[in-house]
Image 1 (spheres, rainbow, N blue to C red):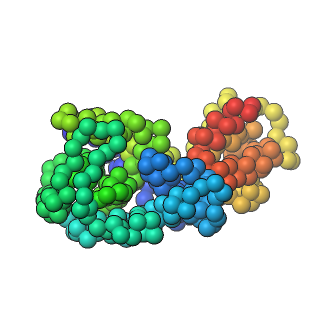
Image 2 (tube, helix red, strand yellow):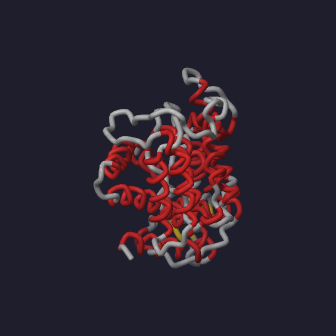
Image 3 (cartoon, rainbow, N blue to C red):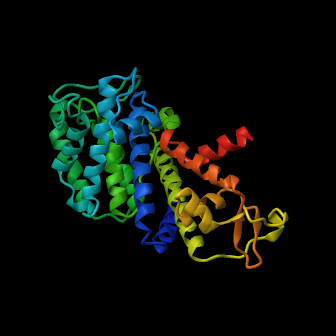
Length: 343
């Protein structure tokens, strides 16, 4: 097995060891990924909604000034398509039908292009800026049947590789007039979910690289650069889940802390134990432990029994973290950078 695939498999096995995760954590992670996947996938296709604006449209039904109706619909539709693939996640890869792929596409383009939503193209298509030639429209139905047969076959390839190959094969058939990339990414993530992996999120900043590695393979070069890009995307998602899961574990098992790393100031009555901080902020203990672990919250001192104590200033810090997550849809690493920049 490729070293990278072995690393991803090991991380996935470690994540499995933390199951089942608390329902509230699972819900938070799922909702975060739903917005992140919608924002990034649409941004790759030119949608100008920011991450925060995407959340406002999807979660609160708010209209964002200066953005087109189509951009709003793309966000709403993508979330509906995510819900659909999650409904298929309990099935096996071999159970995926051609109609499932058509339904994904239909959901993506509903009210945007109802004429073509869920229907194969009948016209030639070209990818802007690419010299790759897409198959003749007449061949699309046959190619899609062959694609489904390929999906149904048993394979010794790693599930991650199969999911990435499915993405590449579908986008190279280019069966639709529009929405091919979003459909291919959703299909890839359906296959990952079926195997217990978190979604692969291709960042907006990776757009040019993503397009280039696909084109290179379509022009006859190796698929390896594309596979590496997908592997890295899955690796990032696994790290997010693992960090959250390990935060849960540390909340169940209090481990000794290096006292030398703690401010030696004498504890005061105002110092809070983590349970008190949780009550003051309406956050769970495992969330606060995780934020502490990654450096968003600072421990002021330790009790004689080794319990962490927080300054009351951490109440406002915890509230600010949650505000930035909800209002600006910032990731925790982005929040940490913001705190470091502001001093």
